[in-house]
Length: 134
Image (cartoon, rainbow, N blue to C red; front, side, top):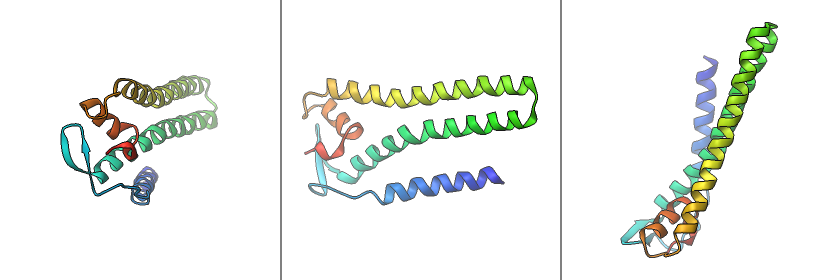
């Protein structure tokens, strides 16, 4: 019951964040590589989803690890505390990996995507920053 409510709150927060992002579009449609008349909202939405995932997933993993660790500490069993400590450290590492995977992918795409008219320029529009697209 509690997890369902938390899940609903998280989904509501994500939807509110996506819907409340301001639009700084140069036009209604953009050209991305060989794709013409691509709606700007698609680029902006993909960029927003990537940014939300980059922040939300590590935070959720850390919160879940903290909850498990607090449960184990409150039970006062040494075996449970050691298991929870190991799981907490694994979740911290997973959260850091998720965050840095996004950072590394963005860095690689921006390094490869020198040609703004090619496919890598289009991928860079989707991943890095939609406001740089034509």
